[in-house]
Length: 605
Image (cartoon, rainbow, N blue to C red; front, side, top):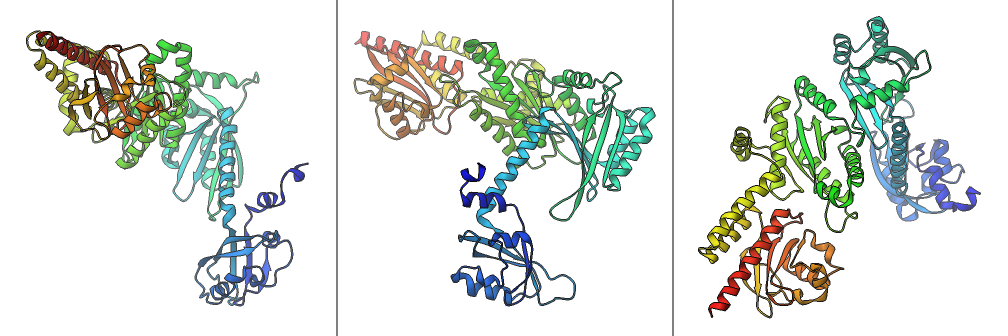
């Protein structure tokens, strides 16, 4: 049945895409000997010369390529006609001449380039499949590379692989013995295990009692089963599985359950607060050559998710965030949840700042895309603060506080961004915040804006226009706006702007359309964090924003929907970002004060 469903060319690809096709030819391209894969590629018949199977237009070029071989490796691209009669591009690699004898022969390999993408996809699928299978039971594996002396131990989850240990094998052995990770009665067995690994014993199986999986918390009997693997480049490594042995009652799940409870957050399956903190402290204490980065991540607008959709849905959001973080971070770091919607990521060994920024940018982007289609009225994103050793400190407590402060800065700047601690930008304000203890990410900022607004209202009663100007200047500077605009009159013509002068039309007549009124939803204002999503719902509005090059906007009617005097807008033109509640409320207040001034001018005239 299978052969009937797969057309001939597809079956040919499946059968041959992974095979190495090797032959030995003389200077005239005559084939002396070829392996089975080589012959099968050309239909199973014996090939007399490569010139029989190369396309006519490449024949002379191939002849020169083979004849002019000087003993050093070379490669070229030619089209050959395969066993199905299809001309396909092949990468022809001529190996360096080896030893003496048969010096006139050339060892060549043909690699079908058209099948490389399929082969790569197949390999990736196989790797992903085996990772998932290993992750179903959260299996542990190990590797040892004699070339660099590095022993590595991994823990698989359904969607990730975490590095538990990675160190020089002698240093790892010394740590396991000196810190009590190996049961006193099994120290000799452990030492023999190290010897078998280092000597590249072809296959071995050793068991001993250890607490290495539980970071010295719970002793368990583990069996290390390994073998030597030959890599495609000719080098060798030791690979193996770590299998828990059952106790006298046939139970080994109790230890696994205990490990889960002790080390992992039950909701997100990342490390819990205690474990990630201990891991970070250990990294900072032991790391001598590499940078250790502490990143603190907070899920933006998570409270709103809980308030609108309930805590059960909020838990699902957190679980997805945890899964996505493990997927993106991979083996470059370790992820933990420290409470609520806050996570900590420890990176050990990303020494290049550009690479680190790329990682944080990937986290930010991937989390945003994870939820891009989930909500109409809000966007799940994340804010990240980061600090690293030794530049920002060498103790975990100091680095965590600085990273947490940068998280506050990221939130203050509008969320959906990452901020690194820099002495020239943050040291003074950080030390002030530590000394005054006056830092609360959400309520603190809102209270500050409320106090400012209270002063504006007092000033408004004395000099209304000056108070409004003060308010607009404050919004522009503090909210990091790109443009503030006021459109006025029957045609809603722009009469005022601050910051960037928007391109496109000088008016805002889209505000009269039915689709914009639907966007308002019966309110006198609308906050649009991602303008691109409103194109279908409010086409005229979306078109106008594109022309004005506005990505995020708050639009406030001055007056009422039935008696519109004007339209007041605050805009971001560089990138989309979620509006904070206090930013929206301040824009609404500004529009109301402008309306009061207009009413007063009308009455005066």
